[in-house]
Image (tube, rainbow, N blue to C red; front, side, top):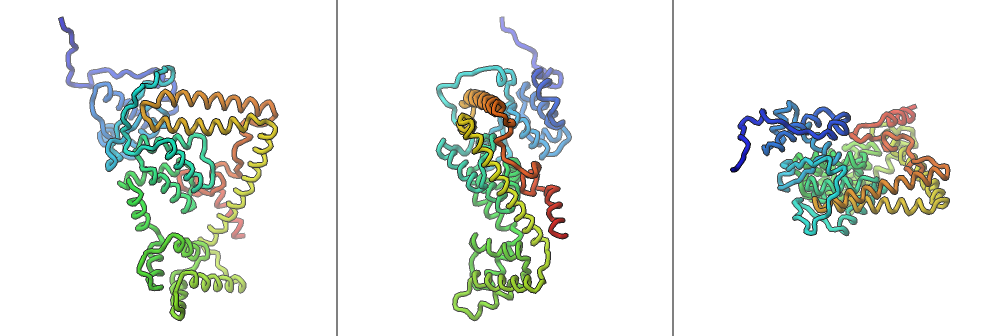
Amino acid sequence: MSVKKQDVQNYYLYDTEVENLFISEYMPSAPENAVKLYLLALMHAQQGLPLDDAQAAKKLGIGLAAVADAWDYWREKGLVRLTVKEPKRPADREAELLNIREMMYGRRAEPSVQPKDSAPFTLDDEAFAKLLRSIESVTGRLLEAREPEEVASWISDYGMDPEVILLGYKYSNQKGKSNRCRYVGAILKDWRAKGLVSADQVEDSLAASDRHYEFYRAVMKELGFHRNATEPEKRIMDTWFDKMGVSLDEVMDACRKTTGISNPNLNYVNSILTARAAEKEAAGEEKLTEENIFSRVSALYEQIRQENAEKTERIRAEVFTKIPRIRSIVEETKNTGIAISRAMLRGGAGSAAVIREKEKIDALNKEKARLLAAAGYAPNALDTIYSCAKCRDTGILEDGSRCSCFKEKAELILR
């Protein structure tokens, strides 16, 4: 005889199985909205019911942004795998709730046949390594321990174009904002929410919204140029408006001085404005505008970062000399982190490799801590030194707001 269970139409009459590991290990520290979304998604998954972000927001009584944040929270914790199916609709993702017991204690062999990558953008090992090197070049710093893994997740989970990711770092760096992974990630998610999925779309949007965009156009028109300003030309003009505190009227007046020369150009205008600024400073007429104060505070931060970088390098050189094995551990940890990121880009086929490499990093960190302690060093002896741990000597917090130490430095300048 065949046996089947009665099909209950009202799924609210069913039970939802929740793993005890979730209740004991993840739920206590998770945000309220994240817990609510996870349980709702678990119910829908077990009953085979569809659930999109709009439905979740309505059922939970929260906004779409809160739903997106909740999904991101569980993705970062490793409990959810998010997949973009359509590059032109990046917000339309599929979520897979992973088995916590198997994730924490199970061991699955890597399948011999790698499934087709569902992400719209894929990178081979060399291309991914090149992207990481480009990010380091743009930011002027080494990537943090988990940063390569996070960059890989932007590609595999969100389907982000690598060129857009690099633009995110360039944008935050050029604007004097935090170039840390979390802040850049927020920028990238904002672009995605606006439907900006290609580098061209992002660049067009940034050009249209740049606060100096109209200034650039006015100056170029006054000089007789019927084209957009180049990046070097923009940097020259940014210096006038942001650092020298020059008004647009003063710039336009300087532009009119070029009518008597055969080849009007920005460098000539720049020489006029620079000379005028020097005359004002010599006469004691320099005004402390908001731009000037910001420029001076930024210069202080630059000096502090340079001094702390030199201190950090001296300590690291000392440790590497006394304990040669530490240098090898640092290099191995970095390479292992990149290996994790590459495995993540392979989707399900790389899950076993991710677990294996993470165990390797744990072992390396324990060995490093043991060697440092034996030589009389603190566990964080190799960490970058910061005068302000909150903003890491940038004046900008990860959410984009100014750090309290920025105000302290500005007050010193105004005294």
